[in-house]
Length: 203
Image 1 (cartoon, one colour):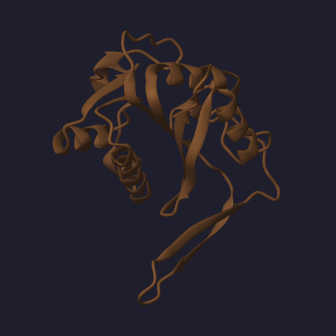
Image 2: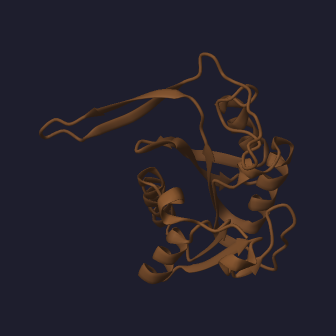
């Protein structure tokens, strides 16, 4: 069974990603959430202890004690949730399954979905602090010479590598029936790219 070591898994960059996960969740003010893929449970634990949000977890690893045991490829639900989250999950499946998995997230959600995905590439960071002005911080990624992705036992693909430009990922998301309300690279953790999505209304 997969276990999560504090020193090996939860580094400073990952803590920054957790902060953004919680921040994006609270911005949407949902009454209930389904999180697919528990990880080490930091976000779920914080939300459960500090808010009135009903938080349900789904994972295929029973040792993590999910509320629902299952995986993103085959889960079926008897209800919908205000918000469905999948942080650093979808890259663990072949890209051919990306659209199918997005469609499953869409069906499970009443309105909102938040995902994060790994974003490969070289980058530089810019931070400007001036008195009386709002702090400016931004990462700039560039992939002049994208490399082939080699399956490492974990990730089948990553944004920015050859064949997986950001433009293609966004197109797949939109083709799955979502409007991208916001997307960004985490300043403190440039390997993580967040997408806040809203279901498009279909006739």
